[in-house]
Amino acid sequence: MKRIALLVTTLLLVACQKDQKGYSITADTEGFEEGTMVYVNAVSQSRRPIIIDSTTIQNQKFQIKLPAPESNDFNYLTFKDLRGNVLFLAENNPIEMTIYKDSMRSSIVKGGTENELFFSYAKTVKKYGEEKLKLSNEYQIATKLGETNKAIKIAAKREELVEAEKQFRKDLANNNSSSLVSIMALTDLLNLKIVSAKEAKEQFNSIADTLKTSRLGKNLNQLIANAMAVSMQKRIDIGSTAEDFSAPTPEGKMLSLKQSMGKITIIDFWASWCKPCRMENPNVVNVYKKYHDKGLNIISVSLDKKQEAWTKAISDDNLDWNHVSNLQFWQEPIAQAYGVRSIPATFILDEKGNVIAKNLRGPALEEKISELLAQQSL
Image (tube, rainbow, N blue to C red; front, side, top):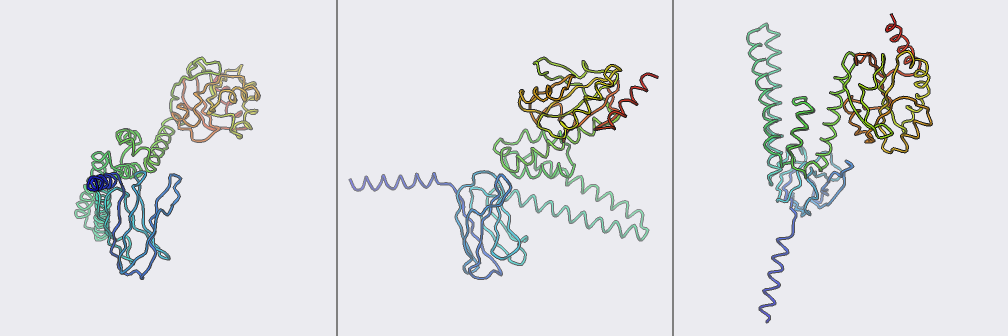
């Protein structure tokens, strides 16, 4: 009976050990004082660093066991009263480090597929940077010495290197969609303008869902949204043709820009919660009353979230013209299509739908409307 109980206990212990998840960091250090405190830091979703554990250096070594990471992210080690840190990816694999007090950036981190991929990526990018710098220096020397043919060859070689680096980054992002390093590579590609916002969005959609909801994934998603907004803003600018749209009115009917056009049309982006918008509304009302009969139309697009607040503001401010909204706040698709990143924002269109002015307020708005309608009557 005792033997059976002992066997059951042993099996339970083995089962518990299998269920346990976590990882350890084992490090050799050089140059640190005995007893130096070591802190393991994580970054919260609010981007604030938090200390999750600590230990001390004994005989130029330390070891620390850590729980399984809650999400894919970078962690880093810091040391009491010392500058610098040692970066690593938290994953459920043992990590071995060699840390140099006087050159923490040169520290060696081994262990885990994520760390292996990350440090390989960082090492390769660094190598490309060094080679490009070397060629740039050689090009400048050849140019100063008047060695034109040599300078041309160096420039061509550097361009080949630049293209090779771009392809390396793209391949890493494409071929590692389940790794956090792909998020990092894609972020670099977007920041360096190697890929467009649209390309980055398509690639982001293929990444594992768990990565999309990570801190770095959320940051990249916001970066892509901002880049897409900027690109759309550049496209719909003065001289561009306004993009048609349709959205619900306060009564729930669909209304398009095309249906709202006059000789001159103002697309007005606003919201009931926007104080500058509400302060500008009386001026817009006066302009509309003065010039509506002469051919001015307005269609307002609200970035409100609540129907009641939206319709109340329309009534309170006497905004007697066309209104539409999807009630999606800053996710309003019309605002995103027009690259609107702050409100109030206005686009003034001619009768063909071409944008002829933007973001005019106060007396400047009336002066422009008066001038445009006067030209229409000639």
